[in-house]
Length: 195
Image (cartoon, rainbow, N blue to C red; front, side):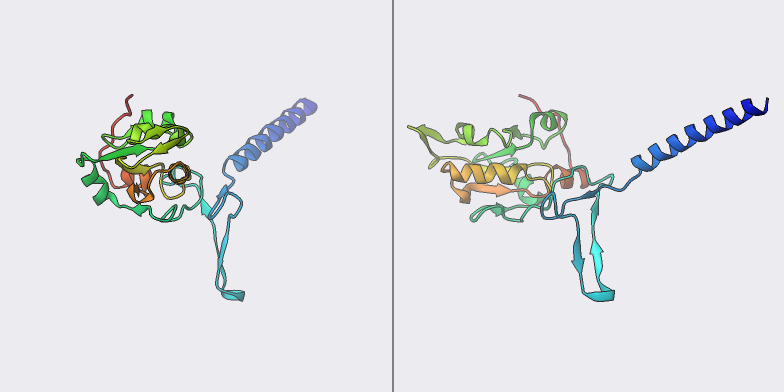
C-alpha cells in the first residue's frame, strides 16, 4: 500500500511539474522587434538611471513586425484617418489594402481593393499605369492610399518602394501608417474584403 501511495505521489508530481512547465512556457514573455526583427530593446539614459525599453505582444498589438518610418521613401505623403476618410470619396484615388489576401478577406477599410505587397510591382495596371514595353508608364496613374496592419507592419512600405522602383511617382503615394491597427482602435467601420 505504501508503494502504491508513493507511486501515485510521484506520478502526481511528474504531472504537476509537466503542467507547470507548460504553463510557464506559454506565459513566457516574447519580446518583439523595435527597429528590425533582431533589435528587441532600446536603452534610454546612462548608468544607474538608464531604462531599457522593450516591446511585447499585447491584446491591441495584433502583429509582430517592427517600427516603420513615417515616410517609407522620399516623396511619399503620410496621412491620418482624416485624409483616409476624405480619400474614400475621391474619384481620383484608390484605397489599396497591401496586406495578404487572408487579412483582407477578414476585414478591411470600406472601398479598399486588395493588391498584396508581394504582387504590387506586377499589378501597377490596377492603379492606372500602362505597360510600355518592359517598363511602366504611370504618368496618368491614380493617387494610391496604401495601408497594411499598422505602424509595425512592413508590408505597405515594401509595396510602396517597389512601386517607385517600377516607375510609379512617389508624389502620388499616400501612406496610412496607422493601418488596420489604428482604424480598429478608433472604432471606425470595417467591411469584409471582396474580389
